[in-house]
Length: 297
Image 1 (cartoon, one colour):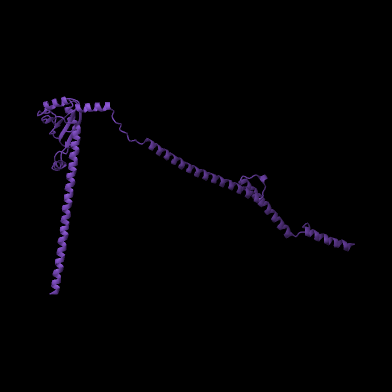
Image 2 (image 1 turned 90 degrees about the vertical axis):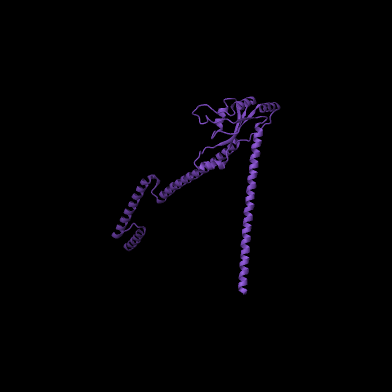
């Protein structure tokens, strides 16, 4: 029986060894203690990490759970960033669209607010009769000489004291004469040679021309035009339309003369150039002939 018990004990020891509850050596015991210490240290480190990252202790100390929670937070932050970026882009495009809409509205307002060409309404028969009567009542005086450097405003001021005036026109002097005067140190102001003044009443125009002709301008003795004389003549049956037609005709004839002079100068230059070319060609031909003669001799 003792042998059987020993055998059973042997078998029980082997089972205990296989289960890990049997006898252990000192080395194995120390290794187990070290491993248990490592496990406790890792558990404490995990708890510290959970406290640092603000995780609950009840959430478990599993590494996968911690990392999953951190990944979820990172995903939420990335989603927030994406939403902010898309919102900023949407706001930018919205502002651009608003600007384009505003520009279109401004363009439409500009088109609406653009100045329209005024349509000239024809005169009624009554208005036409009044215009013809006022036109027939006017009278024009002619000034053959304008005092030096007198302006239209000054002339209107002087003659306006005798009656109501209409239009005033003064013909400027020749630009060549003005340039010559300015070149040699003369007065640089604009000078006029002759003029026409329209009075609303022809009777007043006749009286003014008759009384002022060949008299001094007068006024204040300090005035620049005190000693200058009037050279005025009334023009019977002469209206402002005739003056405008005359001025237009003179301008057209002047332009025509100028164009004729330009064309004449062009023709002269062309003939001179052709003659020069012909002379060069003849000279070259003669030189070639002379060279051939010398070569043949």
